Image (cartoon, rainbow, N blue to C red):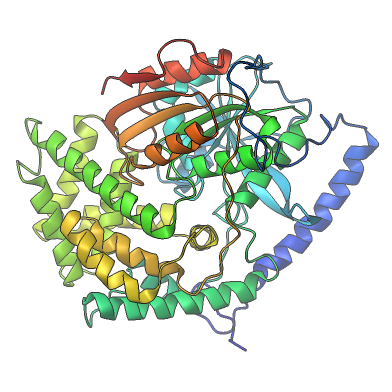
Length: 537
């Protein structure tokens, strides 16, 4: 049997602490449930069969669109505690001004079919002084892209703050990530090798990198399976969706108003497939390609992120004092090449790309924000890597946790064989020089992992979705919208699509125009007016 090793590779530290925490939480939850039952809370609506709105149900007739009910205030509320300073400090950012940030935890069954063991899911709520006390909350998830609580800070500090005038927003961190029962099942060496996509000081050759990456991925799969058994496959989108259902049941409301940002859109679509009649609003903000296989998802991301980086370079070059000058794409390529060749002081090419894309994802979409990222890249190209190293550390803490890897590998559909990856790296690098090689190599991170059963898309939608299409998303690219539109068409669903050509993660967090559309949609679904709209950059 493989020896258990902890976060820092200490062979004396057991890998099984996560299961012990679950047992303690489960025992505490049992006491809480008994206590709650003694005062007789309203448990909310009766159970709606899973798959209402999905499964084998036929698309609803367009000639008989039912009136969409209003969202409800929770019947049973949490004991919210103010936590803005702490959460902002955890993410090395500032708490949004004029916004109250509060935290609570939700015990949710690890497996809805075996409700005995639970995991504590972190909830973070944003509200303003004028948020109505009786307003229905909106539920935000950014899936495994970033902790949803970090995305909430981005939203509440930007254009999305407009929503708080009518509704509080509650972020649900995906299980296994940071504050939602953070997983610790990889060793330090496994984590480093996967984070660098197999690069070490010996060779940057793609085949050699892939060999190292595959070995680390297989070892990590074995270790995480050993640590998490029997729950190693309970971190995919269907289980993230079940956590949203636990929240609905706890609140005692009929329906949830859902906002899915990036990969969080997969969670919202999965929730609609599994619990369709309980979805009251569906907002998909720059969605990823739901249901696409691993190859197509990676190819879409490579193309979309390359386009976002090109937009970044173009926007910067139009500024009076861009640190790039007119050659931003070349400067980024130079930095990535230096990372690949060991010339960035320990920052790999994969680290550097993650640093750039994460910084762009979170930076203000204005000249100062754009130029701050360009300055870090230009300085690294000249040999001063301090700013880029800080961005790389932020990227690792926000996007490279053990829980995010487990979630991503649980969700893999149509896995790629190791022998296919070098050819994809060659082809994609020609098409997308900044992103292609990294996207292809990243397919090797889940080699050897078992994946969860595929979640079929809904066959119908209880409410016409609102799509926010961000073409300059540096995390996933903007290519997922086409796949989602195809799914909606097949389901016979009407939708409204709002396109914004700005730069950054989450259209809702950045566009006043998009935030206005969301506010209208919350009050009135379906929206009246044109089905395709544009918002100024």
